[in-house]
Length: 194
Image (cartoon, rainbow, N blue to C red; front, side, top):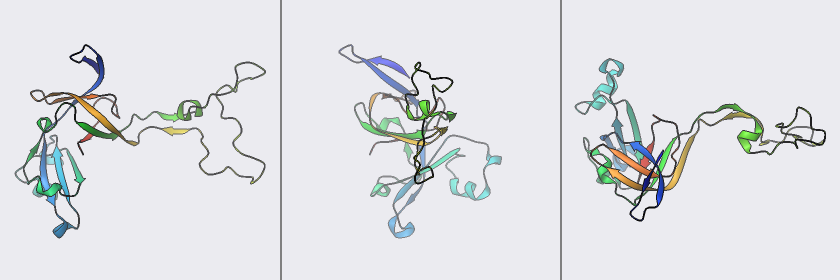
């Protein structure tokens, strides 16, 4: 993340996203496949690491590292096999939704994971400042499903909606998205404009 200034001199917190150009690999239609979608590929990898059926699927387009499919009604009429999708299709002020895998934080306690305030620091509290406290009642003599406890945190697919595009740098393939996006540096994210 970084910050940029608008024309009035206001500070805007932004996340810089390096957008690799995407190539349309396949267009799926309602008649042939039962639903409408566009399959896109991006990135590069060695030919020896691609299975033979995938080589035939990618034929003449490239050796893609990432392949994703986006379902949307009427999207098939917008694109054809081999079309490029890049940052030039987005403009400043556009609303987008960004999806990605959030930062994985491992096994965490209830204070960090769920925001429990913990026990008081004084009045006889000893070695129990960040413990969850009681987890159930005498009856029904079991822990009720859904009880918030310590456990693994993060590493889930998160979608942040209604983010605005603050700047588009088409020369360097960089988008400045207002606010925070899920994931750490180098994480693959999906930016959708609808």
